[in-house]
Length: 184
Image (cartoon, rainbow, N blue to C red; front, side, top):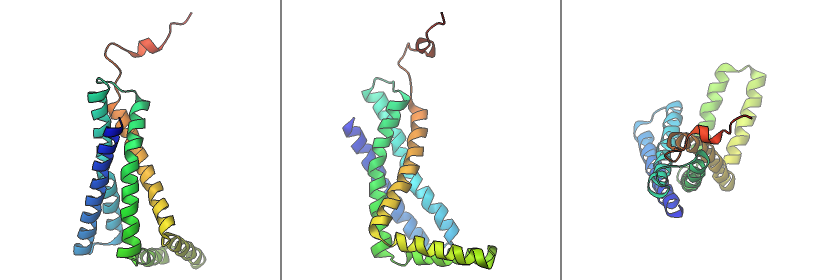
């Protein structure tokens, strides 16, 4: 199981790196708006998670004789998720701290302008302070890294649950009726 987890985790980690670079280039070349950047960014994070499904399916079909319980599939999926979560967190932290240190300031400016349009002055001032505090927190490499780990863990958990639901299969000849004892 360890080889499968490492192999498919590395595939997903490499996928995270490739999609991150592609998104970075697309955004840099096209200069698209912040809302579209966010949507593209989340799609790029989620796409490599397809390797979770393929890893679980490979384990089920090649190692576990074509059957796997939901919990076993979830365990394999969650273990695969660790590698892309760490790799994406490293990539993103290096990017926002060293390559584009003004990344969060641009997001801050965009959000401030958006809130200026819709909030009354008292709420606006409070929201600006809150956003400024968040930006300052994410400039800390350790906070940024662990924030990305948590984000990736949440998205990865969703991916692992969906993949486990799609791949779990009972052994041939076993049915739900075998799990239920007759009432006496």
